[in-house]
Each structure stands twice: as C-alpha cells, then as structure tokens.
Image (cartoon, rainbow, N blue to C red; front, side):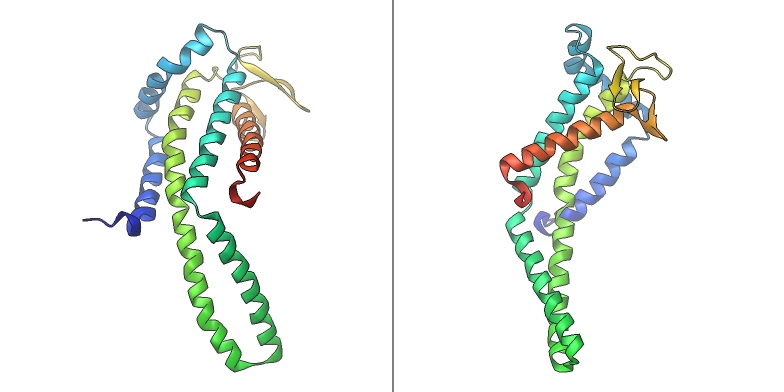
Length: 206
C-alpha cells in the first residue's frame, strides 16, 4: 500500500504535471469549459455581467481558496522556525570560516546536512497545495479560455477593459509584448486580493 504521507508530495508533483499537459489537449479544455459554462455562463448571458468583472470575481475566489489551502496544508510556524535556525547557522558558519576553526566547521557541516534535508522536505511539501490549487483553478481557466472574446474583437464594455497607460484594450488582445490583457488583469486582481486575504488571515506570517 502506498504511504501517502511519505509519497504524497511526489504524487502531487506528477499530478501537477498531468494537469499542465491537459492544457495542450483541446477536447479536455473544451469539455471542461462547457461544463463550467453551465454554472458561469448565465452570469454573462442572462445577467449581463461584463467579462472583465467575471475575471475579477473568479480571481478573487481563486485568491481566497489558494490562501486557505496554503494556510491549512503548510506549517508556516515550523517553516519560519527552520528559516530562523538557518539564518543563525549561516552566521555561525561564516564566523567559523573566518576564524579558521576547522573543528567547529566540521561540526557545523554535520548540522548543515540535517538542515538542508529539512528545507528539502518543506520544498517537497509545497507540491501538495499546488496540486490542490491547480485542480480548483484549471476548470476556471478553461472556462475563461472558452468565453474569451475572439482575437480582433473591438474593445467594448463586454469584451474589453481600460488599463493604465494602455487605455481601452480588448481582453483577447495583448496588453504588452506577449502578455494577453485578460491574463494581466487576472494577475493584478488575484495577487492584490490574495495579499489582502493573507494579511487578514495572517497566512505566512504576513
């Protein structure tokens, strides 16, 4: 029987890779997108909610559950404790190197291996919340791709957005370089709201 506690991060990593691969498979994107459209479509078609507002709403939801998943799957107190110990260790190690104390350096090197293992374990644990967040986020992205205005659609209240320094742009167009306007808007909303939520819930020691 598979030990989920031991192999969970590895399984999560493999699952994350499969999710990324699904982005390149059109029938999966379309099928999931249409399934989500049953729930989200009426907001645009019936209630007339502009697409940029839907992105704001969905990015807010994404920021909320991402923060909650991280809060309850990552031991931030232990992580901060490990980081503090590493900072103290690095200071001691530098002092030992400068003083040329070989005996102390050898002793600290033994501690260094254990601390590196702890940090590696924390890094592996990040894959589990990442996989959970992806499972929840991918259907949203597939729906956004499904309902995204066609390329070349003129900017309007239902298909565009006004961005600083750029003016009115179509959400399916590029904001700058190769970054689509809808992706930029999604990132701005998600990052901003996530910071507010993390601050409110005291996630990650913010």
